[in-house]
Image (cartoon, rainbow, N blue to C red; front, side):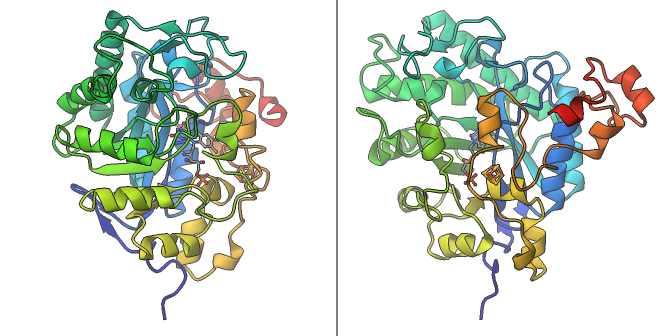
Length: 415
Ligand SMILES: Cc1cc2nc3c(=O)[nH]c(=O)nc-3n(C[C@H](O)[C@H](O)[C@H](O)COP(=O)(O)O)c2cc1C
Ligand code: SF4
């Protein structure tokens, strides 16, 4: 008789790395960043999930160019200190036995420029939501800038020692805005038929691949269905991946969904409690059938390792990504492996303190786990989340000296 989690807890070989199990902690924005750099808060938050058993950790979206920053607290790859800061994350996650991938992304029209005071860039001048700002239609020169920025970002992640990168082609971000007929109204070499809409993604992937050493993994994150009138559906996205696979060897296909249009993203991409378990599992299944030789990651409301076993056992995916379930309980994997699944603090799928706070530009928290993202290092640093050279501050006073931009000591309580 199989025990709970027995399939999910099996090791899995990717091209160059052995994962100790099949559980991924997928990329999710935390608003823990300072000056586009990862912080102590990131380091402890991600390392804590690795210590709890996740085999693969993926950073939140690392924005490859300042036109994608949106808020002050997002992550980017363009700061001169980026390599050092990301290397700190690598060390901490590796120490806990997990591999670390960086998610590379440009948000395109979704990058609200309120704090950075930049216009959002997009394939065409179509706002991302009703009443949203009208984005700037990218020129061919802008496209070239972003392509090169993806290449630079990949090089920096390689220098920082990451195990791979995940290029974001989904969630309605810039690359999907070019891929989709719903958001790409161009009539130049980057718009029109499917081949021309794919061109930008192809150039980005070529720039990224050129910078990755052989041993580094290359994954892509996709939205299998945009849920948009006139948007991409699974057959279209499979066709796109098929066309790209002729030129690139993907180590991972991470199959998500939705186009992040208004509030629809909250109810589908980050499915709330009105959905049942694994409501979009048909999407990774479709990709597994279309690309049987490429590892596929399934995601969304895979709330425990029982659901994970079911999905993996049915052949719907090779790996499972659990975001909110591991925000709510970083030890979900470890407890299940020890036969203590009943002790797992379960995510409610309320979306209140995780994505709800992100949408209000506040740092991530969790209704059932308010300790999420509030680490010992933060306390030592007097509440500042800055990541100083050499790691954690050893005392409050050291924090004052080393931590750069300061939050007041009571800042921790306020947030
Ligand atoms: C707070 C929050 C922020 C997110 N930010 C990102 C992100 O930066 N990049 C990304 O690809 N997905 C992001 N997601 C989506 C998750 O990776 C995942 O696909 C989604 O939460 C569904 O999985 P779950 O049911 O296991 O939480 C975010 C999700 C949450 C809850
Ligand atoms: S706030 Fe916590 S419990 Fe609610 S959906 Fe987010 S992770 Fe789950």
